[in-house]
Length: 284
Image 1 (cartoon, one colour):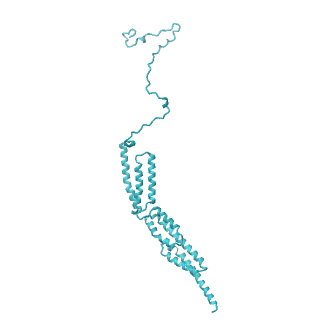
Image 2 (image 1 turned 60 degrees about the horizontal axis):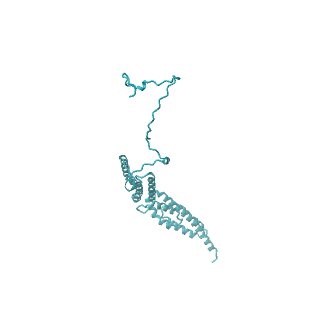
């Protein structure tokens, strides 16, 4: 130990009791501090960064790979519980939706409803446990397949939604006066209305429109033909009235046909009187 230890103050260091030497010419100035001890060079606590790797982004931690190169994901009890709840809700709602659809549409729609719901279920199953982009893609594919199934898959009686719209458009484009074609498609139209009751108004409107076009065209032709050959015009009107009287909406056009037939009869009577006058005016 340097210096002498004071027995009465052994805890005080010896260097603290020795006053620093004063400068003889400038006693008011404190003496310069003692030279600092050489600092021990410490090793850096962090690893040095290589200059070439300063601008590189930090690498993401890799997921542990399972069998087949697929990432092995551990499902927590909370995720397992939520998946079970979702599957239970879907398993409870799907039969209810199926029963509601069959009750509203009919038992003949069983096959097309099953195909539509199967397309949606397969797409949701394929999107399970995948990233969001893949999920959205599979859901879009499933909805597209469900729409195609609902549009083109027929019922048990062979009527699809696409064929229903096509049947209505064909009736609207049916030329007037074609009674044979109209009667040929009557059974198909009845089946269409039975399978899809929402088309009843469209089918009825299209049938009445065709009857109106047919009668208007027949009346116009009869009025034009009455000037030259009223007997042929009358025969055509009588045949048309006989053919249309067996149709469902004939009552809506009966008055127009009756008026046209009366006018044609008057034209026939005038033609007969004219011919009789010509015959009576001639000498035997």
